[in-house]
Image (cartoon, rainbow, N blue to C red; front, side):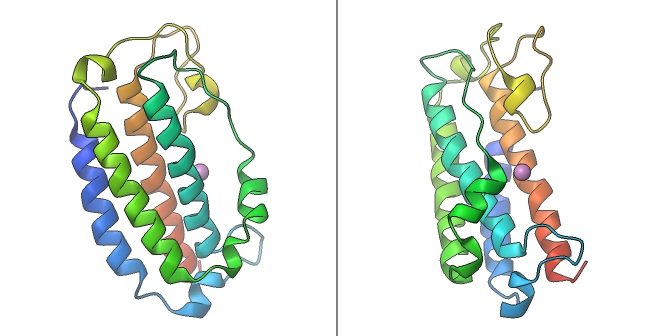
Length: 164
Ligand code: NI
C-alpha cells in the first residue's frame, strides 16, 4: 500500500457525488429488501454510518496505540438502530457529513504516523481486506481499506435500488 493520501480525496469526491445521487432514489426502492434476505439500501447506508462511527474512533486512537481494535456485531447494530424506519434524507446527510469529517481526520494525521509499520495489530480480524497477523500493518492501510469497504457497499446500494 502506498503512503500517499489518494484515498482521502477519493473519499471526499465519492461522498459528495454519491450523496447527491442517492437523494434522487425512489422511497420504495430504498426500503426494498432482496427476496433472498439481506439489507435494504437504507440498512446498507446505516451499516456505512456504523462503519464511519467505529472507524472514526479507530483512526483517532491509532495515533497513540497499536492497531488493535474491538470488532462489532454488524447485523445486530443495523437492526438495533432501526435504520429501515429512519428518513432517507437524514441518513444520507449524516453519512455525508460524517465522512467529510473523517476525511479531515485522515488529512490531519502526520504522514509518518500513517505509514509507521506496526507489528502488533488485528487487521487480520477487523479489516475488510485482512492483513495476515504475522505481517506488519499501517494506519494508512486501515484508512484506505475503510474507503474500499465504503465503495463496495455503495455498489450494493445501487443494486438494491435497481431491484437486484
Ligand atoms: Ni460491510
